[in-house]
Image (cartoon, rainbow, N blue to C red; front, side, top):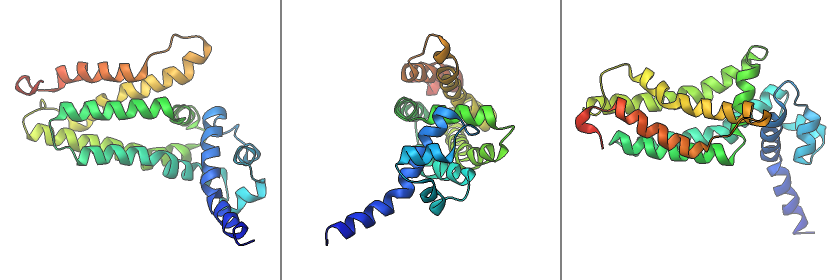
Length: 212
């Protein structure tokens, strides 16, 4: 009995995280509108009532998915940027490798497709995605490019626009995989695509003296 009690308490404490993990998979597979709390509960191995113990609405579950399952990936990128003051070329290669791994090993692509496809009907999910993920990722990259401009590495120009140019192919690669590959389009090797993108980008982004 003594071992059973703590084990049960640990299991109960794990339930919110298990619900979030299940919701991540269900959102990626079915989208926001089609995802049902029954689906999430079944995937998590709990009752629908148990879901309501921790989350009042599907929107609340989505916020938890972003904050607990997806935002840590952006936090990792921000940490990479903060710990790497230069040169920019090495930083971009490292970030591209990290993002390629995340895209290949998590359902983030399906959730991104969901946000893009359903934002008009469910603007709150777009707001959460923007405020909790996009702003921080784009801001960190903008800061890194601004610093590189100050060091004389990067050409003059709007650093925020440069940051968007840096990440845009990541989004396109994900949407291609999630939208067109399921209907027969030839897939891309996403990590290889991102490596090639970085090398192409650096040619136009860096001043000649700063090119590796």
